[in-house]
Length: 262
Length: 262
Image (cartoon, rainbow over all chains, first blue to last red):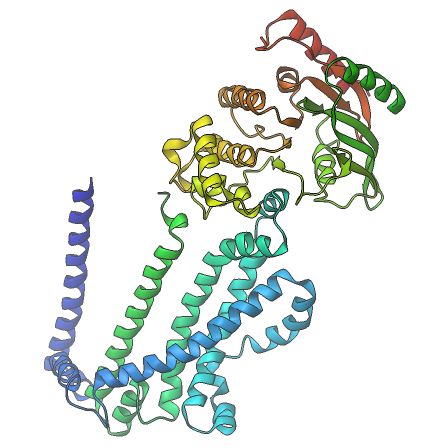
């Protein structure tokens, strides 16, 4: 049973590699034989440059360092939006009064994308790190609030009743029923928030920065260096994929009861 | 009507067990203009198995929820051992119509939920959980999450959770309403066994007349909305009961008539 499963997995991975290779091949051929070569570098060159810039600095830092700077910014901004989003979301989901106070303001601010805050953020905080944190925060905050709120609202009343009948006080009701049953929703919110945070940091770096993956792309554009642009883009893709997988692993750990029964 | 009941009750209690466990006095509840419970009063003896039957939608669940203060009641009170009922002081367990397992807890954690709420020491928790799981035959599944379990198993987890706190009063609201017949019979016998072993007092609500006749020491028949006590029937058929026994059928028919003709 298990063996069949892994065999299938290997097969799927093989197909994935074949798909990737064909795209690279089509790219290589079209750059060589058509006029696409004038606006696109060869994939081999991009891969080569990607590997070289991992050791040799682009600007002041190596590619890996740039990626780490971007990640660090995301980490700070995302942590802030995650913690405050969970708190506000639960408060809005559990208290009608807080919901009435907060929801009009929240619903007005929510549709504004994080990047729309860039000009104001620069005026308020200058072009330093605070601006980036703020933009990431604004980008991811709303998603956490919305999801957490819906989780906190959907808590099964029967379970709350069952806990109360067994003598639970308000605090126990909250920590033993409300919080655990909201966890999957909170997690969905964090997942979306993390990917929007990653987008927001790139936008922020494109506007004003001297380091980070976004900076690599924008400098590439300013110098007419398509290889550097593509290297930057690939690094963004790699990190994005890594973050998504990381969240999935954590979710599997934290919400294993939803995924598997034993 | 109400007076008659009380007199009749006094006669019974003096014969069998003098100890009154629960006193319900003048319970009244309305939702807006709709009067659901109208001045309901009765006593339950210690260790008694009381069934409450009534036409579907007559307010049976409302009745139980009012008893336990999940709903605020308009008038009336419920005394346990002569004192106003207090969920933090009295060990009361409630088994809901809906399955109320906590899906993020394993079977044994579900069963220990009430004990932890009440702050029992770890050794006691372990001992009680082991005992109850063995009694109810869930020992093999103690590390399963509810997601893996069937409907009847889920309800048994809930019953185990209720018996783990060794309740002085057990309230059950059509606990087997969603199960198929065979499982229902099985769980009914299991419940009787646990009840006989522990000597707990049970108030069991059902719309299934056969179930009421099979389980109870005494049956209260409610009227249609607003619910009042229409009739009280003593059920002294010897256990184990046979649903084909003419006396069983006779009692069942009597209850049926009472529910039919209001």
